[in-house]
Length: 70
Image 1 (cartoon, rainbow, N blue to C red):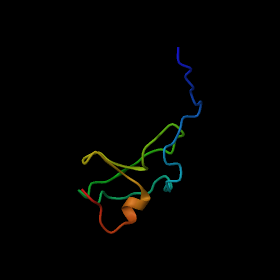
Image 2 (cartoon, rainbow, N blue to C red):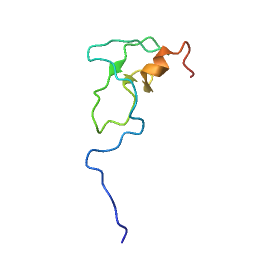
Image 3 (tube, rainbow, N blue to C red):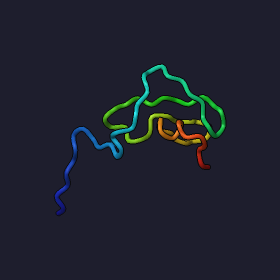
Image 4 (cartoon, rainbow, N blue to C red):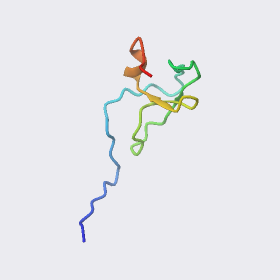
């Protein structure tokens, strides 16, 4: 039998994403739809911004670039 290990607090794959303040609003650079700001929970593994229409995640770094690749 294998010995499995579980991390109680979960793991973030990229812990140093800049997380904007709650209430911040931004638009999707692909479709101009309003982005959803995700909660910065210890068990959330994605980027801060989510576009429901495009099904795409964005970081602050992604949004600060002049162009976003398709």
